[in-house]
Image (cartoon, rainbow, N blue to C red; front, side, top):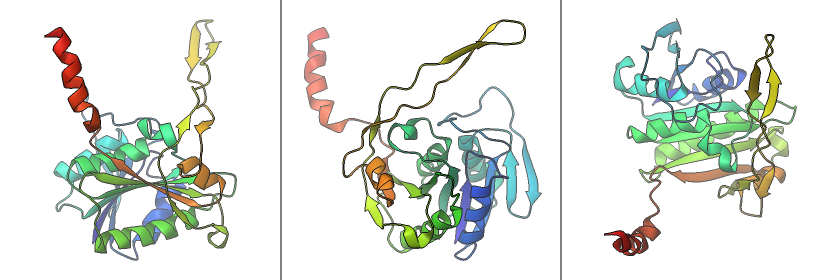
Length: 249
């Protein structure tokens, strides 16, 4: 099995190195990742400038672009043969609820799914322990399971792992995405020339963290596995929207 591994924390991050080492036990791992931290890049593609790929070592490449750029380039031209699966992570921090809309980690997996490959995003809900080995162990098991039992073609898995030693993890939960409160306000300050600058505020605290959500699972010390559909269409609303649109025909 050939595994394409990417992330949004950069090719030198501890998370991607730990995961690459673990996945090597089940297949050939090819790392194509950003040359620096690109957290929050979401699904952005670089269209206004050329991208450069640098070979760091055998089967390790860095790209001066976004996580989506990395996966797109790898599958559509860089690699000699198409990988069997795309794995993104291990992210340094959770990607829960609304986070998936902004996450470069999730976006890298989603790009793999857009291009027709099974895909998984893996994040560690850091709490100071930095138990990346726990996340890597579970990810390896999960990807082995995917090989034998593929998911529907429109689905990726968003995996969040509590920052605990493996023997303290409270199990695995199938979860839906929770929901955060509104983000905190921007932080306004000034640069050395007294011009205003703004820092994006922190994400809001969890609002919908009921049982069954990814937030609840992590709080309970469980691994959260959420299926995410790439198709964003609200199929249930198609008929009612058609009726609504008749009013402006």
